[in-house]
Image 1 (cartoon, rainbow, N blue to C red):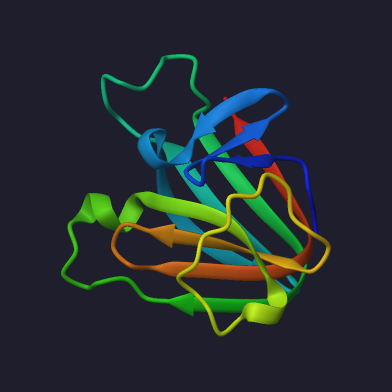
Image 2 (image 1 turned 90 degrees about the vertical axis):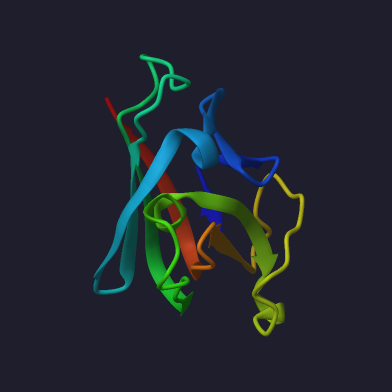
Length: 137
């Protein structure tokens, strides 16, 4: 797997030297599929702690997906917990039976998946060739 970003402290990413706090500053909008590609979208959250120059949106584009795994979140969770990313990690593809582990690793290894854990318990796990993170102003 190749990426244009690094994971920082399992709640944020770094893109071109910019720290992006996914947990506090962005809300999950949704996931879409197109053939062997998946897109996960986030928008800037509303709150007085979010800087005005923070990106308005983020898009994780998963290219040539070979594996995908999903767990639904708690249907009774608060709305903000359904939108809030808890943690993000790269994780070995040969350990796909483990979907609740975190590895403090900045860059993926060749055979890693990426796992996104949300505060409501939702899990998105994807194995692919490339993940491209893009931003919107």
